[in-house]
Image 1 (cartoon, rainbow, N blue to C red):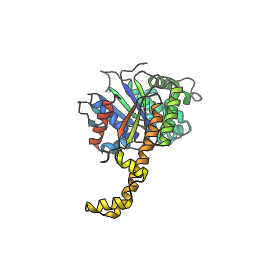
Image 2: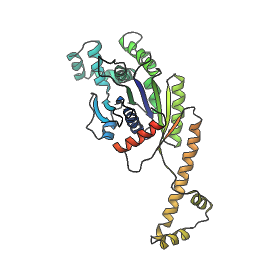
Image 3: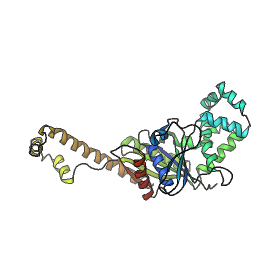
Amino acid sequence: MALSTQLHVVTGKGGTGKTTVAAALAMALAGEGKKVLLCEVEGRQGIAQLFDVPPLPYEERKIAVGLGGGAVYALAIDPESALLEYLAMYYRLGRAGKALDRFGIIDFATTIAPGVRDVLLTGKVYEAARRREGRDFTYDAIVMDAPPTGRITRFLNVNTEVAGLAKVGPIRRQADSIMEMMRSPDTRVHLVTVLEEMPVQETIDGIAELTSQKLPIGHVILNLVRPPLVSADTRTALLSRTVTVEAVGASLESAGLDPKAAYDLMSGGVADIKRQDLQESQREILVDCGRPLVELPALTEGIDLGALFELADKLKNDGVV
C-alpha cells in the first residue's frame, strides 16, 4: 500500500541524539514547504524540550515554521490515550472507555501485551498517514522519533508481536495495515549513530534485523562528528614525541600565556588524535553497511532552533529529504 504521506522513522542507540536528528529532519521537510507531523512514542517529552514549548499532550500542535513555508506539528503518543481513541473509533466506547481507564484496565492490558501496545502507538501514526485531503487535517510527511535501535525491529514488526494474541479481528487487521505502511515505498527507517564502537555495532545489527524483516532502510546518520583540533604537522610531532612539554611551555610563555598549561595542552592534543582515529575506524566499518551515510557535526553552542535549522540544511543537502 503506497501512501501519499512520507514516513520517516528515526532510531538510534540512546545518547546518539536521535530525537535531535528527528527534529532536524522535520525542519528540513518543512523547509521544502511541507506540512509535517513530528511524533514521539517514548513519553520523554524530548520534542518539547528541543523546541522550548510546554509538554506535549495527546494532541497535534503546531510548534515551528520552516523557512520554505511549511510547518511542523508535534504529537506525543502514549498507549493509554491511543487505546481510548481506538475504543472510541472502533467500538464506540466513549464514557465506557474512560471508565476502564479509571479502573486501570487499560494500563493492565498494555502491560501484559506489549505487542498490543506497539500496535496502538504505531496505529496512531498509521491513522495520520492514511488521512485524505478534504476530509481531515492531512500531512505531507510524518517523522517518528522511534524507540532505540535495539528495539526498533520488534517495535515496527507488529505482525509478529500480535501473532499469538490476535489471529483475527480488528487488532489483527490494524496490525496488517500497519505492516503495509511500514513496508511501503514511502517509508524509510533512518539509523542514527555516533562514531564509537558500541553504537556502531548496534547500528550494524539493526540494519541486519531490519533487512531480515524487509523493512525499508534509509540513511545511516553519523551524528556529533567532531573535526580535528590539531593540524597534520602537530599530530606528527605529538605522536613522534619530537615536541616536549618544555618547548611548548616556552612557546606559551613567549606568547604571554601560562607555561604551566603545556602539559594539559599536549594531553588534549593526544586525546583528540585518539578520538579522530576512533572516528575514522568506525566510519570505515559503516562504509561497508550498504546504506548511504550522512555526517552531522557536533555543534559547540548546543541545540536550539537555530541549530536545528543548521542540521536541517545539512540533511537536505545530503539527500535525506
